[in-house]
Image (cartoon, rainbow, N blue to C red; front, side, top):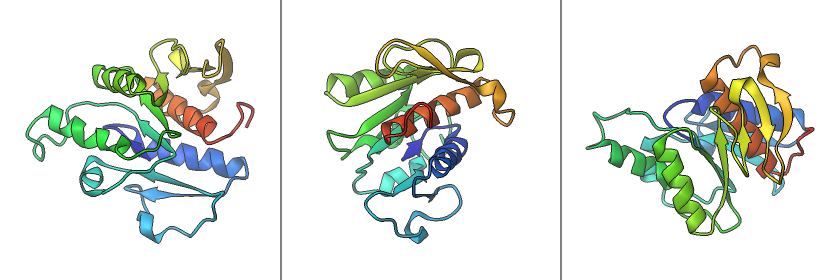
Length: 192
C-alpha cells in the first residue's frame, strides 16, 4: 500500500513496473486507475500494488500490508479534515493492522514522516527510512539523484536516477527511493 500527499501514483507505477520487469506477478491499482477489487486474482506469490488515499484509508477496516509506503505530508484536503493533524492521522492508518513482519517504508524528509518512523521503530516495527535530501542509515537515499542503499549495512550506490529522464527532480528521487525500498522489502535484489 502506498500513501502520502504527493507521489503516490508515480511510486505505485514504479513498483508495479519494477516487479513486472523482475518477472514477479503483480497487479497495480487502487486510487490509481483500476479499483482494487477488480484486479486479477493472484496466487500466494503475487503482489497487489495499491495506491491508497486518505479518503480510502478512512474506511478500510484493516490494512494488512506486507509493505506500506508513506511518502510525505504537505497541507492538503483541509476542506475535508478539521486540521492537518487529522489528515495525517488518516494517512497513518496505513499501518493499523499491519503484522509484525510488515515493512514500513517511510519518507523522512518532513517532520511528519520522521515522527512516524520514530514511533513505528520504537514500537518494534521494521522501518526502512527513505530520503531524497541526504544519506540515511538503514535505508535508501537519492540525494542528487544517486540511489544509495544502506538497508542491510554500509551505504552503496545502486543506480543513478539521471538514467531515468522521466523522473526529474527531488520529488521524483523520493519516489524512486521509495519504489526501490519497497521492492527490496518484497524480496527483490538490488540488481533486480
